[in-house]
Image (cartoon, rainbow, N blue to C red; front, side):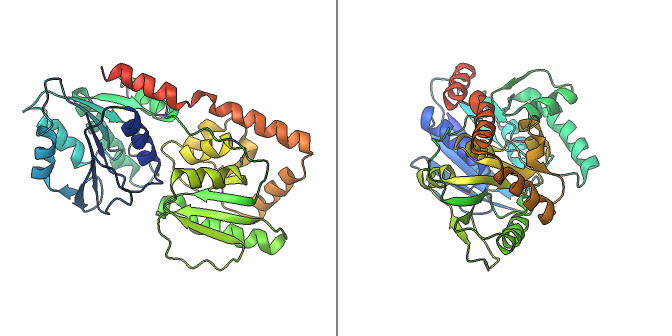
Length: 340
């Protein structure tokens, strides 16, 4: 069994899902095709450098071909493909199937719709994906992805919700805010940093705030902010469980893994109203904001801070009910069932 992935960052949502599959399934090779070198190490990890923007990327097709076909066994080879942009990797893999009959399981992770930019062309390209999807089994990882497939009249797909690390809440809430996200344009990390400056200028508190990311080119001017890069899971989970609010200014999320894990650890989410978060928090819309207006976000948080202890605890318990469906055990069980 082989995993083919496009995410080289340890804290990326796609990587976290694939690492769980790698830990629980019989994976022979974990292939990452990406511009940047992976910032984590596994025994079965193989990196192929890619060039150019997705979906029109270039990479060493011959090395990829060799790695796929070197894996020949008595049993039929299964390939778990995490390529949300449906790039040239997917097209090449379909071409390889002509020479060798193996199973390909395409994991959705949000598909092409990161934002509305070039939406007309994205829809045309997505129809190409629907046409080629007859060559592999499509796995939708969220209700949002399931809805996209249904809207495009795709019927033969399987929904397996991503499993999350359900964290134990710490009684000590050492940190005020936490944002987890790679330093890419869609995550809007600068807006988070701007809000942090606004908050601490308006309100005094001994609690610092956290940013967990991969790289950061902007200097942090606020002494109340601590920045961590590429944390391992135990350290990351420890920080989340000791934080009051999990924040996101992201325009787009394929799934919203960090937000759900934060909720399980007793964090209150304050986030941008995007498609994924709107689906997760549809009963808690007052915790979302449409525009990054620091004053409005500040007032929203002050209002929650003023809740009585029993009311705030009730809010957190109601939020925790949202994560009951996202079990790693259930996720692995469902993967094993279709990978037979």
